Length: 475
View: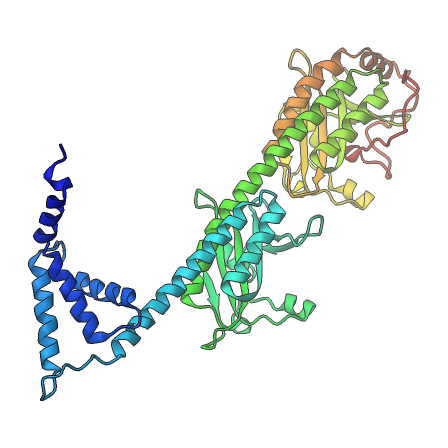
């Protein structure tokens, strides 16, 4: 049997205990005195006023309803004319209510726009598309002419702006310009007059003919709070006060930047996962090719050419170790190229058996700068790894120069480490490799030895084997 609280009698008891009828009478009396255009909005307002008037921690008391009624009737009596007729309240209250509603509605509409923007941004898993989506939504919500998103290259301490797939990046040093200052300080910057700020660089305006007026710039952080980029909005539209961005714009931009950090992180992880899957497949293909019936020259070309493509480097070389002579050697066409193990980056890797990953080759004393000067080449980044045989002894060195997109990463080291752990024993046990090594030891291999001093037109640190330049041992 249902309890009394769930029956009609129980409901009536609840209404009586809460003095609900008096509450309804009070709301009705207030409405008659004000005659609001929007009754629901009016009720919300008067209820909010009563709730705000409560003391901290005070809960509802049924006697409150009678107090509200008495206050309402007292106000009505005080406003009556000499004939006892009640006078309606002036419409000023409704104006105040309308103003409050207007602000609330604007904020609600803005919140809806932000939610919609978040949905659009998070749908993009390709980094460039995610960037373009963030820029577009920022301009739309902030009502500004332009927006940019710089990504931080922590290794080089630059902010990079990608404008299109395959296009050259625009780089800004950290600490320089408005975006660079925000990246270094981690603080928001809101400038109403760009040309009045000493950190503003007008060079871009001069080159493009664009005129920057106002700037809002905020740091973009990842989930750990580390700065990974900078968002910038230019030229606020529709702010008649001073033409600059408002406090509300700062709040919105900060929220958008937080979402941008999440979106870029997700897009990066998605891209990294796809690239890793592709690289594993390519590594397996290279290993399969190494099992083919290739001459030593073709074998070296296959490895270097495909590794260069895999890592997206400018150059790649594979040197094999001749322990008896203390040399690293490789082949280029019909030429046997040899360099001492105690020279250069590759020599250091052969002797120490450790990976060397240089962000700036010129900062390392082991790098021979004269080679760049002779060839007119500019070496920036170097990744060199030891090639080990079945007994884990170093039998060679794989060296890559100048990563085309940034710097050589730990992911590059890992995928190449896996490849070399498989390729080393294969090369060591290759009959062609053994024959070629024996031939070089006896000076019987076609071609000539260049000794320890390479000619001006050749750099052993940057050896490239061109397709079709094969030796006569290919079968």
